[in-house]
Length: 408
Image 1 (cartoon, rainbow, N blue to C red):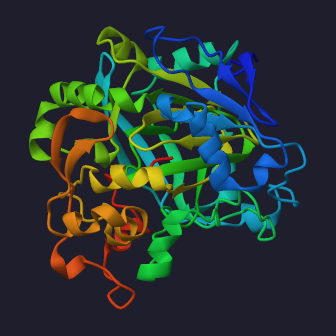
Image 2: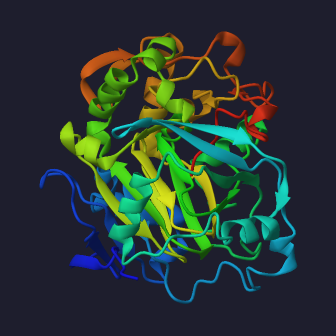
């Protein structure tokens, strides 16, 4: 099989290297390219500092970047086929039913009965669900879009937990040590899959629909074992254009919820994006590689076959302005809303009083032509260490409703 994520134009960053992805570009030559980073062991020791270094090279402009860890980094010493993983329960695997035509689709998740990872792996590798024969990743991508509405795949998504060894101190998805930890430190709250790790067990054709992260946070995804993922990404500066296109295509959904893309059900093909001049790029993530999504970076993709991935969200000071102005879904009770009080107070103290008064007027970081007041929670939700009620999510976050899942 060919490898479509071979690396292209190369330039050095301090001590390590970063490269452009050479996946075939499907939009404008001026579109920011997805970058691939190879940190040195020294650079790899500080997660937040390396994210800053990536952004200093412009990685955030594409909305997505790949990080290939140094060879000495081992996230798990035991085999991925050992009983501690194979006997894990997937509480709510979902059948992904896709409806639509001509590049516009809606994806519905129908909850199935629980199964172990071993049972899921056997299902994924069965004749019914296994990866089709293909020449290279481009051929497999064509098969995916040609067959997207047929034979729903089953996704073992949103499994709370981590399979990274606890003694892994750097780039451990379950303890990244970013400012998102203020949520737990100041509010005493953990949100599964947002500030703790989630596991994802994929098979051929399982997909994650177009979305940005909850509160437009960053995210990190690592494939521990198995087959690759194909990712599509829209540069954040073109996010509003993508939203306008989605609103025109899915007018009924948009009329019911202006933030309907947060339902994570909308699938739009790359050919459609190209036809409407929406810039995007794509890349293939292999086993042992990280993907980083950046604030307000719309992304989507699919799995090539059985794999095991781990993911969570994180934040940096640059995110705070995005979080204050993130769109909110109000029709799904399991949507995640984070009170920004502690972040504004700590990171933007000069704006804190204005923010409290509802006078923090300014543009969204990726929409400079429109100014508005930053979202302010109600008084009952202004948080302190003695009032830990600022993150609103119901138990459905643990066991998602059939229509809504936290995508990769």
